[in-house]
Length: 267
Image (tube, rainbow, N blue to C red):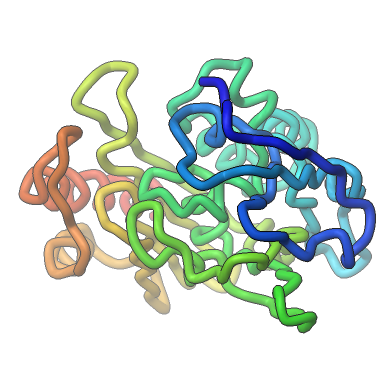
């Protein structure tokens, strides 16, 4: 879709360049920007000049993923990483309703910042306890859990002018065994429920519900729970919603069933 009202476009190269004028908006991969009308948008601030496009393994075993790394590039990096949690990178990337062209343009940071319930990078970050490094519009900085960024379906806790610089994945989560399930009403439809989990080396377990709920539901146990315990927790979880892609009751039911499968695989 053409953005006919856009009159200016500039490339940000320093933090000072991120100060937004009235009508301006950040542009990462632009896959969402050009997918629908953008009322009131008159200027674009391109984030590609900030150097946030690298995947960096850190000395402590953690991983820093720049916000401008594409979904496709992160999946490819994971394929060759040798990490125990590497399969989840590819699985979440392929859970995004997008062609290979879109995956090659859509960015990790943009997917998190948009905060759609079916955001596949949100599922990845929430399952692996990732935190987002955010440059706040007021000049401060913050580290925010990825699971805490969505405030609703397409609603974010980020304020206008806040910019995600990178995601940080802790070493213990990258060394964990992971599992994943996804379902949609249509074969190639947007995720109606996206379930993921991990079992850490100390035996503790994290199970996550996304897409079926307005915001991520993160469930933690000291050991892998029984299927009955998982079903009970998933059925009681808040935030299931109805839209054209599935009713709240359907989302709750399939989330409970598939999350129990995730736990069984981790066990």
